[in-house]
Amino acid sequence: MKVLFIPGGSAATVFGLVPLAHALRGAGHEVIMASNEEMMPVITGTGIPATAVTSRDIWHYVTTDREGNPKEETPLDLEGQALSTGRWFAQMGADWLPALLDMAKGWTPDLVVGGSMSYVAPLLAAHLDIPYVRQAWDIDDSNIQDRGAELELRPELDALGLDRLPEPDLRIELAPPSLTPPEVAPAELMRWLPGNVQSALEPWMFTKGERRRVCVTSGSRASKEREHTFEFLQAVARNIAPLDVEIVMPAPEKLAVELRKVIPGVRAGWIPLDVLAPTCDLVVQHSGGATTLTALNAGVAQLIIPEAVVFEAPARRIADYGAALTLQPAEATPERVASAVAELLEDPSYTERARELAQEIARLPLPSDMVGRLEKLAARNQG
Image (cartoon, rainbow, N blue to C red; front, side, top):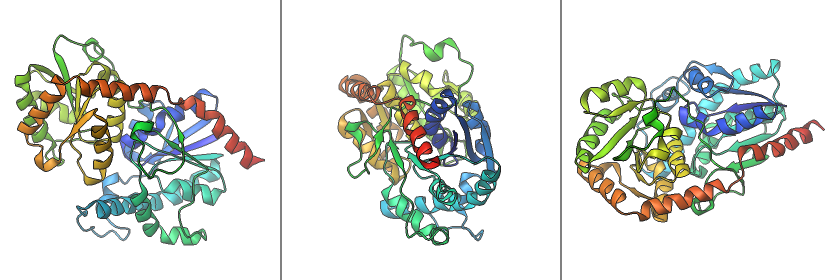
């Protein structure tokens, strides 16, 4: 069986699909993951074969329309922001479709697996008349984003004679039952396993030290130039240092070099988060899907500062369960962050609730348990 995986053009969307891709490869099936050129070292760094379908990065679709004109600023309200997000993910999908159709002439997949907002996946499957599997890459739903995608993809849907996006033949969700969104479509639940890029390990990365360890991260796309990330991380480190904690900052190496220059004693770099998380007492992060699930999987309490309004709902569900605190960006002053960190470290209930969620995740079916379902889907289509 040949299975084509299509993420969303960023590292987090790749990481979410990697465990299922590995499960299929482990069962003897052929797997290729298709994305943009920027993601090629990320995908191959996880051990999955990869092919590039465009040289454009994800920010091209965020900032530039199909005609090459600059887009207006992203709306700040939830509905407007979610619709806009769905539209640019869909624009990316429309841009990738011709290259994927051309690829399929020589390597014909039996099945397409797309991430939550990989809108080219259902289009490609419809063109090829093969089954389509939609696998979540985080714990959010994307109902409003889907509406935005259908608006953007009107020409592509009309060409297929469709009035809406095709429904998946199988939908796979990752949220444990206690965190399931209220209006999620019926789906098979699958256990989250980290799929991040690895690196050579040093003993401190997988060994708990004498001091409490706080992981502070802005994700795989963080940079010194982006959204005041550098200044924020520096200020947070300065304000939580009096709590006598060890600060570890997983970050792209280019940013890590700058962080090590200005934060005394910080351990910063591309540290595999799946290895680091179980040694941490707390994760302070931006509401990234892969980061959130990796911390949940490790049973670690979190301070979540959503970088966009569309990320607020899943962060709020974790906080409502008692495994995290959340702060809005406007209120996340270094002083407020330090106060929240102190509360999370001193009150054991947050860690207890986080461990309950980890146990819930561990009881879900493994990616390898999904292989048989996918084999049956492909066989049914071939028959």
